[in-house]
Length: 352
Image 1 (cartoon, rainbow, N blue to C red):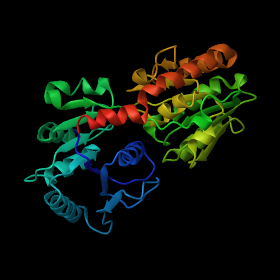
Image 2 (tube, rainbow, N blue to C red; image 1 turned 90 degrees about the vertical axis):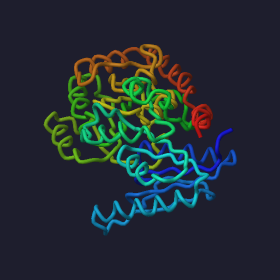
Image 3 (spheres, rainbow, N blue to C red; image 1 turned 45 degrees about the horizontal axis):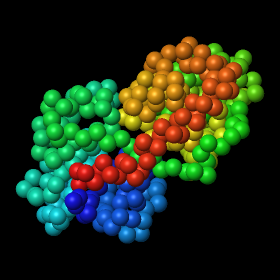
Image 4 (cartoon, rainbow, N blue to C red; image 1 turned 180 degrees about the vertical axis):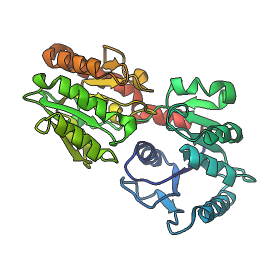
């Protein structure tokens, strides 16, 4: 029987993939009688709605120097663990994981850490890989999002490895709604990993097909000006739009004919999962997790990374082929049921 006293630890609760997972999972677990605490270390932002019974504890002190902040985190986390030895601790992201493990030395809590991306391609400092190999052995479990990432960890951590995908929160009022509008949508931070530069290249190649279409990229980030410049250079201002972030992304995207994930790398894309769950026809690069979310040419299309010519070709093909596009969207909705919050929470409960 799983422990029903759980504490999640992460940087903050602003909009983000892991943050959404914690939101969905904790709100679901409290309905089953779980006692949930959430500790944030980097900021006190909360962009999600949480059940009133969930206790959010903030250990961020932005006015402290980093060296002093580390001591502050170690002290407060260690004291929390000592006072609550019965609670299972679940931390997210490599830096937070390492801080959590070191803070738990001498404590009796069950400890689970979760990696949220591929450590071999996400650009992290190699020192974190060295430290994680040493310190993750002190944990009860290491949770990874995909089988592909897990394959790199099994030889080091063996049975401690558990593959648990992101859960999907279904919004049936927006799912499988037809007819669709002439919209091509993408959702993600405007940063290099998402490769929106390649996406814009592909749209430029397809622009003769897209005279009656709007292409909308929802998200914000440091590459906004660079991408806006590229859009202007291609004279695509009437086609491609960058409106920033929106609160209700499901409502914003559910009528799109195509959803595109152009990323160079992902852990497991929440944006792609949501698009699939809405019954959208999706094209994704072969970044990590894509082949576990999409059954190729059955519930979506997977293309090589950084290939604007192939992306343009697939966009043109699916615009021309209504029957295939609708079938891929229908199958996407059906297949995404494998990632329902009920099924994914059961996987978590097996290790709590």
